[in-house]
Amino acid sequence: MTTEKEQVYEAVAVNTGGRDGESHLLDRTFEVRVSTPKDMGGPGQGTNPEQLYAMGHSACYHSALEHYKAQEKITNPSQIIQTVRLLNDPSDGGFKLASTIEVAIKDMDLEKVQVLAEKAHAYCPYSKATKGNVDYVIRAIEYEEGK
Image (cartoon, rainbow, N blue to C red; front, side):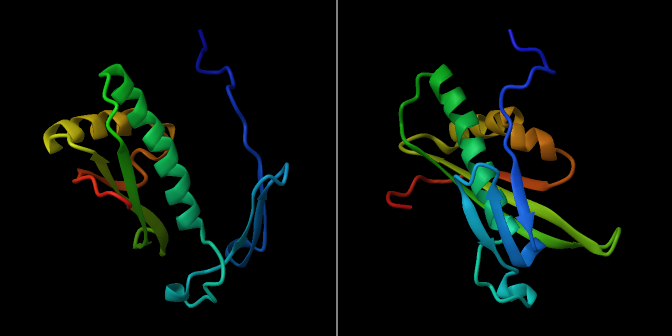
């Protein structure tokens, strides 16, 4: 059994240039140009940290949802749509994150989807890491093909 202090995995990322630079994994299996969004006065010619966060968290969250679907023998396809917003933070004049996680499971009652969505949020490592620091809305939505 794994204890809390036993490491299961480690990822190492390197950034140069901050929001207007480059980020890559140490082993160079993923590299991305980072750019401040046009909405924030930047060139918008690359990916930004909020987009990377949305992709990483949504993938992690979806795995947590799959965990609970498997426990209940649910094989219907599912989708996670995560919206990450950068907000002004009046407490320090900086910024903070807010996020909406929309969960869809094909041909399933929205009340049941909501229950599974809340369980997944409590189980997901990203959600645990940001608990109390990111304002979340977790919402069940209808499944849409091709989204």
